[in-house]
Amino acid sequence: MDITALVLLLLLPCFVWLCFHFLILGSTHRKSFQARLPPGPRPLPIIGNLLEFGDKPHQSLTTLSKTTVPNVFQVANHHHFSMGFLPASAHWDNLRKICRMQIFSPQRVDAFHGLRRKVVQQLLDHAHESCSSGQAVDLGRAAFTTALNMLSNTFFSVDLAHYDSNLSQGFKDLIQSLIVESEKPNLADFFPDLRLVDPQGIQRRLTVSFNKLVDIFDGFFNQRLMLKASSTDNDVLDGLLNLNKQYDHELSCNGIKHLLLVSIIS
Image (cartoon, rainbow, N blue to C red; front, side, top):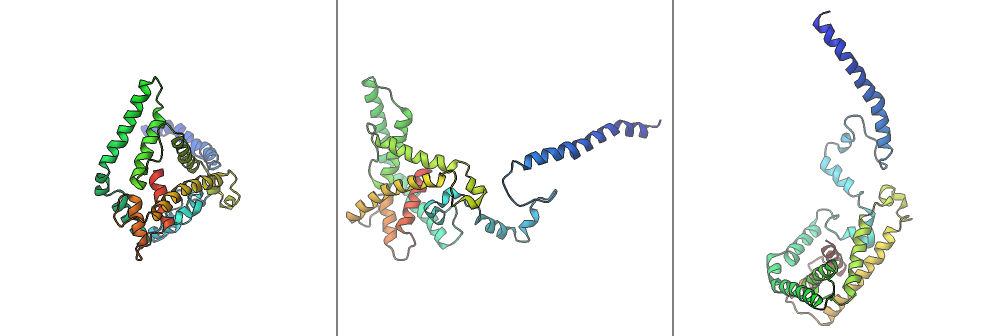
């Protein structure tokens, strides 16, 4: 027997095993894997759904993005106000400019340096008083109250919670409910016909939490408008309301609420 025949004889069992693995076991594995996938376009062998991109894939992806907005972000038409879902346009560019100038600008961050020191000092004083009286400190609740007051002072120039009050816990529960519900797998995203039914009640609970948060925002809005705030930007809300007064700007009061919602949640 020559060396070629010997090599073929040795490789024959490997070839038979590979054929059995890919044709029999591979088919069974693919069927079990596909059975766990949500409904979607049927892919072709090897290339999958590559042909669906067409000769202008950027336009195909843009069209696809308009049909894939998660159901939770459609509460109160949030997807019509959020930069994450708006198409590239003049309005989208204005929102980016607003965030850059009114919320994340170095001048705005530096202006609240003293505020951040004050809020941290309040946390230290609370911890010192609790330890002096022999009471345990709930670090999670205290840290949330500190972060909440940092945001509320930056946006509204007020303390929204206090360490000896249950208000901070109630607001914490409200924010957590928004985050938890938005992260849950939603059947309505896989079966769009179920969106009106809302079988898991996710959108219903999100709507309730969203309306509660909007009521809090409305209280700050009405108070600030009654005070007839000057054109000086004392905090983020002043800056946003001053932009709202400009006839050539597209920022509405409803848009401000959605913008503040994203800032606080994130």
